[in-house]
Length: 577
Image (cartoon, rainbow, N blue to C red):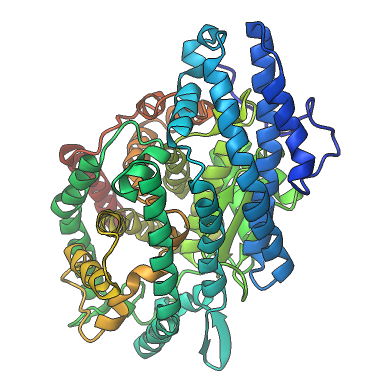
């Protein structure tokens, strides 16, 4: 396999659609679907050309939809951008779906399909068959509604601001005060952030309830008894089951929670507190200033490019090209949707990074995380078909989470002293461990939600609290904060916008730790394994992609215990340095 050595990415040339074609409405798209449907395929060569043309059409439509979503999330208060996105989801996408199903069936019915290289096309054809199995005409209008409704979370959350010291901040910007040495200020801001979220609790509850009803109906229409089972199939979880997820939850309780408790005990001692409250967990002792690795989005970009350049020049070139193309929107502001993402752009190749930076270490982690996703997009861009680039989300998150750990050795570009760099590494490794309980909480909650679709809002809140308590450290004192905790699930974007997408972070974190173990022994070999796996896109099964990176696809308790032991050793080594 030839590895990408330069990040010079070119927009895919068009051979089927006109170079100046722009998606405006269904009438302009329909002739291309008809062409593919009516075309005679009389040889393996003509089938391969048909696949390339279908892929080109798919890429053009995909990129158009992505740009509509990107623009809307960058400015949720712009009604024109919202209407453009809604128009696509309500007027164009519903027309595309039955034609895509028709073309999928044409492909599988074609006698030359069995002559395609089985190694090259196995996962692609498996996904085509899965899409045929799940397609139902009755779900088209429901899924159109869901696509629009899901975005309302960003609209609601994008308006949330609080006043601190007489100045207005988005919730993402206000979070930096939770690192302040002033404990009274931390508590004040913690309560303001949570009170602001509670102000919209009914709106978010109603939105989620409506989403659940529609998702459940999609599952019933497809022959499933619940949306969880439908979603497992839709996400292409061919290589693990709900029982594996349950095993993961238990392994987190058994092998991760003891380490989490040690981390918080150490934090309590470090701060000299009798009681560790939730507004204390990000703080430093009095006299130690919070880490401020950058001030502006521009500075974050340049420092990340410098960091990536030390790791592998190709990685830096990816970000440089994205910057030149205007594919970065990094700073938090009012009216911008919350969260962060890397959006692959099927035609352009260079993806778009969206995030809400406010000058904190978490923002550095987010930037290198999304940068890892971006590198994945660059590495897989040259694959022949758009479908080859649709890699499993679990390996996609390995790409991002491994980059968090690989890049740590070069975080000196963000910090002026060895002491600050050491603190940053310690905080990052704490995060590697403390994120597991939240992953387990969100995933277990979703299993219950979709297994019990007719639950009441009160039952939902009660179950959430029960699960949250399972994965909350007893070291943290949450007394008097029950109402905040009751609605804590509402801050998790994935529940609203990408249901059941969360266990992937846990699986991928295990893979990332495995790659980091390789990196500690031989950095160059680990990075080569990383590139080799990402270069395959989605052309191999998930266990095979893990294998290409030199990893075991394994989230058994024994394997988790081994990886947690390694991270703990690294944390102890940092503490001694």
